[in-house]
Length: 50
Image (cartoon, rainbow, N blue to C red; front, side, top):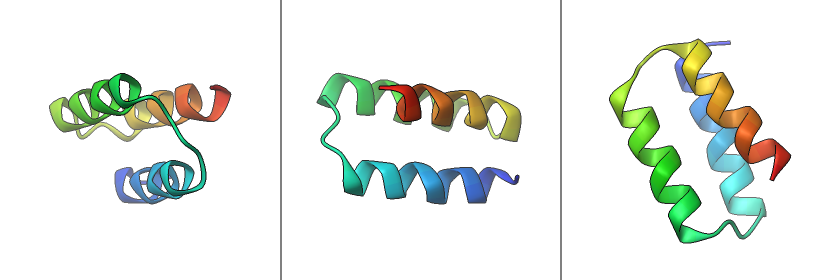
């Protein structure tokens, strides 16, 4: 899965669920610091498990 595909799925989760703002800010910061698709997948799993 590419970084763009992961970002698309993360955006889909964000549009479907109400996540706390600090969580969203943390995910955004982490994703902006790295373009690694594996790291993005970790962030996706984190959101998916909340």
